Every structure is written in structure tokens, then in C-alpha cells.
Amino acid sequence: METGSATPAAGDIVKDTTTANFMKDVIEASRTSLVLVDFWANWCGPCKQLAPVLEKVVKSYGGKVRLVKLDTDAHPSIAAQLRVQSLPTVYAFRDGRPLDGFVGVQPESMMRQFVDRLIGDDPGALADAGPTLEDILAAAAEAFDAGDLQGAAEAYAAVLQEDQTNVEALAGVARCYLKSGDTERAQQMLSLVPPDKENTSSVQAVKAALDLAAKAAGSNETAALEDRIAKDPADHQARYDLAVALAASGYKGEALDHLLTIVRRDRNWNEQAARKQLVQLFEVWGPKDEFTVDGRKRLSSILFA
Image (tube, rainbow, N blue to C red; front, side):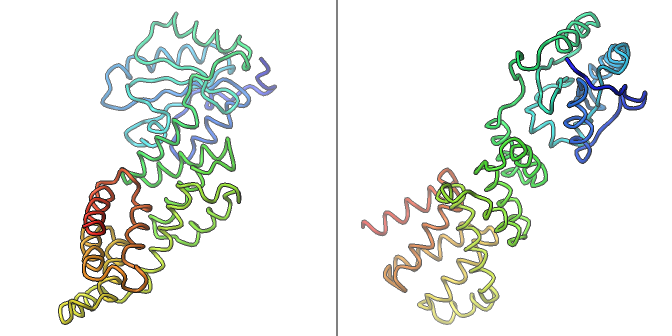
């Protein structure tokens, strides 16, 4: 295997990295030499056993192999993207992609065999033991649902590095921007979606969420809307505007109650605006969301009573 003409400086053979530097220290560096990434944590006893032996093995190869260490407590998003579930875990990267890895403390002889095999193998002959794009997309979705917008965005960006037109990743980055309040960048990401993929459910969900955000921005203050409803419970416009504002702020249950109240009292109001808004919310929240499931049941019971 061609590993490049320059030998890494001593300080580059073993180094610590961060989420921000992972691309440079691992992905880019692996295009000129084999890079081992040691995922560790300070509380992990086996990690402390593995580290000195692994460093010894790497240094013995005279720059053909580099070791990059990532503290998973300080920088959890990369470990989440790569589905690291146990510590210590070591992944080998070459040509910008994970090739193989091992978990737990290994004898020095086994680690040398591991490195020898990867240095000697033809890159094209190795099965990619790392995560697939689908795995990374799933990890990104999990991070998003857990509120880790940075981790989700980084995972989606990793997918886009491999496939610039990946619709799920483009929609995912747009969702991250939207969740952080940057609707302009969210719209810019959606503009990159190929025309023949614009009707994909994930794209439509983000568009619906953007539309909801726009409606919420045009609504009056919730206190004023609540006051109008208290004075006139039949003020459907105030109730509708309040529902939109509540939904945009994450108060799903309250938004559902108000919109269903409108449908129950006058389903044809404003050309069935309340029903249409409910359908849009279900699209934004996703089919498995508990409020979507509950809302659809309640809406059906009203419409088909």
C-alpha cells in the first residue's frame, strides 16, 4: 500500500483529538497513512491498560501508523455516530473510511497482527467493517431526538461527504437548523434537494415545519390569544392561531386540543383549516410520535362519528 512520502512528526504519531479536529486528525490523515482511533474515557480501567501497549505498538511502525485518542466523555458525538458501545474500542481508518476494529484489551501480539494485516492488505479487498450510511443516518436521528443537535448535524454532514445529494441527510441538516431557529439556512439546505426527490417524506416534513414556523411568527402573543378565547370561545381564528403558536413552541398536546375543538365545533370553518393544520402537524411530528397517533385517533372519531 502507498502511504505517502512524508513520515509524520513524532508529535503526530500519537495525539489526542476533539470533535472539531476529528476530520483533520483522522479522516484527512488516513488518506496518507493508517490511523487507529482509540475511544476511551477516564473512568475506564481497561482503557488505561490498553493505552500504553497500543502506543508502543503504533510507535514501533516508524510513522506508517498513527494513533489518535478520543475522550468519549468530553466528545461523545463521534462515538455515537460510529456506534461505539463499549470501551475501549479501537477503529482503523484508511482513505477516509473505517476499515476494521476491535473492542477491549488485546495482547500486544494480537494488536501487531491487526496492524500488519491492515498495512499489508489491498484497501479494495477489505470489507468495510465500519458503519454504513444507513447506520450513520440512524445515529443522527437518535442524536436529534435526544436533543444533541451538534452531534446530529455532524453525523448528517459525514453522510453528505460521501453522498452530496443524500436526501435524508439534507433534510436532517435542515431540521437541525430549523430546531436551532435558523429558518433561512434550513431553507437553503432544502434548496439543495434534487427536484425529483422533493416529494420525499422527510423533505415534506421539514417544509411543513418551516410553514408552521412562518405561521407561528405571524401569530399574536399567546396571552392575547388566550384572552380572546376566554371572552369568546367561538373565536376560531384566535384558537387556530394559538394552536399554531403552541405547536411551534413544542406544546403538542395543547395544540391538538385546540385544533380538535375547532373541528368538533365547525369542521368546515375556513375551508377545513383546522383539519388541514392537524394533518400538517402529524407530518411534522412523524407517524410514530405519540401525539400523532393520539391525534389521528381523536380526529377520526370526530370525523366519522
